[in-house]
Image (tube, rainbow, N blue to C red; front, top):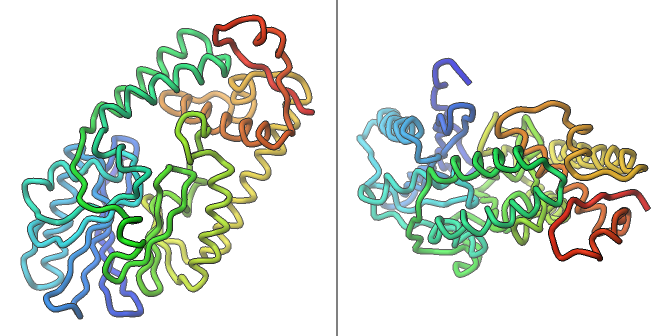
Length: 344
């Protein structure tokens, strides 16, 4: 994306908290938000940062200037040293990478869900393990050898930008309550994804976005991800946050009708599942299905399309709607070979 970074917007909760949406240049082609929540009714006032950006230089600069700009609006200088807590919605680098720059500037305690804890504390280990799972997935998906290498290289390059970060607190250990924030675990997009509720406001990370359906990857890559978990979490969230008036995502504009947006996302996946079933009237690999679903894509979007397709194929296969067409080939070798699926 190009153009000037947008200005900070302010919102208020029904309980009087002031919420500042700080726009960030996360990566060259990705923008998003961190949120600074100021509870002036507390004594002393409490400052909570929700997500921290990617850790890229532009993202860090935007976060710093955003905090300073909030101070100007509050008529008092504030900086990272005044933060009380940093609440991370999930363990993806564009949401927690900025913590690295804050470590020497704040004593704020960092919170993450237990299932994403190692994403932060053992980041380098995660890259190695997921890379191995991803290589096997790409082979089974029928991706050509040159494209497998490009996808793995893209994954490693983008993920190598982060590093391990210490974490003080986990949501489960805190009984899913941090100060006045209520917490709900919603696995699917990420294993340890949580949403945070404060009065009538919801901070939903990448669980629900207003402009796109959040990316899905097959559970075989990471436990507690996958489309099945995600759809279950949507239903859980819909019931839990029924009194929400505004939902803030990690990317895009605020959501003013959460129920409607959840239903729209469900419909996206139901339509995609129908298309996958129609394509698999004849045997195909995941890579072949992906090309039909998403057409020609480039760069990192190739990997995203393959993972999204893999999540939908996995969902249908787990529920007995697909079978493996080349089972004899798999049975007669110990090597990983492309799998061809077909509709039952």
